[in-house]
Image (cartoon, rainbow, N blue to C red; front, side, top):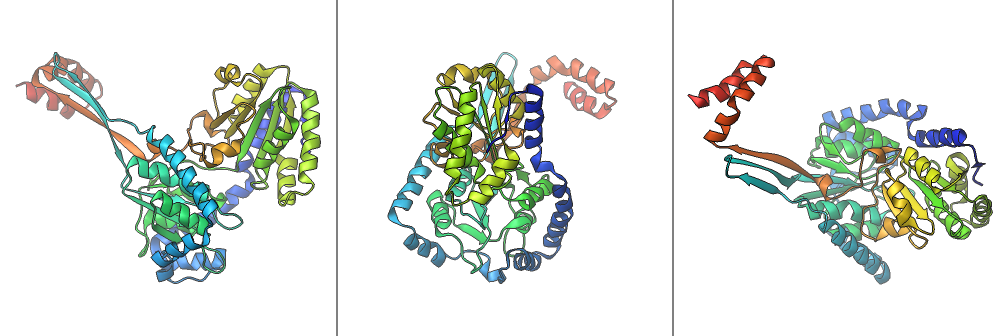
Length: 431
């Protein structure tokens, strides 16, 4: 059951506690382990990679078994039923269509009067590594959400890593999703050691330029530590949803939306903010009813108990203000007029508008990416996109007259900064 609060200060304190759950004391104790793994893989390559896979995943591999073979990829298609394959293909087509629309365009501006050319040139990274979680669950949707924008951006080499099962196997739906997206370089390795392999390279796995994709706390800390050696998308924390709902929302639907987030893991957050105390009470009753025979009941109850909350507010404007403080990964506006409330929302990873747009639509096949900023990062960060896999170079060209026009100003600035050769590089061209 969600604890209900009507006090603003108490509500803000609770949201702060939930938002900081990624940064508890246990995280800092794991940093040393991650550092050890990264350094070992950097020095020893495949040897350390295989050793840690045996230690952490209880799977003994040889270097030759790290890469998934073509035969395994072919076999995966035989194991995925037609309906699921069609669902994967539908999701792929819609995700691809959305990300194709978001391709940044290079541009150049000519000023013939001043003989100046300025512009930006966008180019993709050469190689990207995508991390797909394994273990308790498999996520073909995560494969698509990471691979599709990379390929749409023009990345030539896209590599996928994912933890192996106890029998060295990988979920066939993940392998099929990878092939549908266009990824065939796949390695059965996970955890911090997989991030190390992507960042530094080993004898079997060549290094990449950018790493994306969510994982457990060890994966997140590893991405944090290798940033700078390679680029990363974000530091993904536990998943979260914040629902703003009014009296027009159906309690059963709101409860299902909150549980859909809580069932991810025991640290997932599910928050309801509403001006209706009646709705708050009825949603609580529905949560208990829907949990009764839930197949992931223990885990989901733990998330709800520790990181669930219901906040009753005076009006929707106050709800929006609290939401902005939390900056949720997923925000659902289950209100009569979501487009009227939308201008008040400043910080959210993805915004789901109306009573018939559950988060699951965005998670799987609406098109926008489901890899989103968490733990308040939506205050400054954005969803994974084609831009994530691209960078831009500035383009500058000055003619002789254009340089002469600004030479004096540049010289004054170089003298003020004590950099005489900077000034000479301009002055000598005027002689």
